[in-house]
Image (cartoon, rainbow, N blue to C red; front, side, top):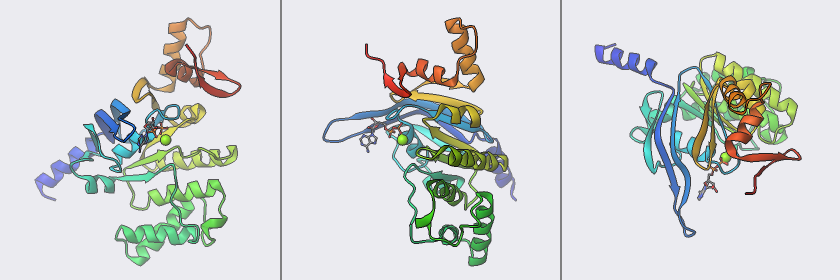
Length: 277
Ligand SMILES: Nc1ncnc2c1ncn2[C@@H]1O[C@H](COP(=O)(O)OP(=O)(O)O)[C@@H](O)[C@H]1O
Ligand SMILES: [Mg+2]
């Protein structure tokens, strides 16, 4: 390694997993401009599981799509593992794995075929791709179903295959957009286990969710976004303590209480609604 390469490697090792400053996204259209993200700053250190919470339409997916080079950034800047996503999108993509809200799995393929194909797309040899597929099938506990068509997989199995597929090239940072939305409680717990295991193996995880319990269980730190702006940020404990002290509560509130306080919503019959003025 040359001195320059060594210096770059050291710099990359110290770079935050995600560093975003003043991220803005305006969608233009015939109906006028939509200010989806209105100035978001994020800093996620390597090794964290970071939660990005917010109600529907808050700007979570838009933020993830900008961070993962899938959407242009209107203004502001972002880097992933030290690589600027606008200036070097190809290099940035090699540092990241992405599992989006709408999983694009071909139902006619088997799980194993899908993972091998992914490996081949990343220039793995056939035997490397097969080995990597087997390793990932074990990681997400799909070895028994590996040679069945995806068509017959349950929702939870599809999510886990999607997770595996995002990990084929050993990304430093894994982006998950609502990984458990629509899953039954048991499948949700399995996905949580996979996420923990992936993180323990050294991958930084950035996940969006609408489930407060998910963030509480999985995330060391989180941010709450509402109307395109971050309205709270901290560890679950910090956020609960802040609300407890501010409202003079006798005991710790839940993360749901923090979320409702932050977003000005109230809970009616298990549903989150906006408070009418
Ligand atoms: N392609 C698009 N064109 C116009 N508006 C969009 C588009 N995608 C999302 N939006 C709007 O941007 C806002 C944020 O959406 P999104 O990032 O999908 O929120 P979330 O993922 O938090 O539910 C919403 O008001 C949504 O309607
Ligand atoms: Mg979304």
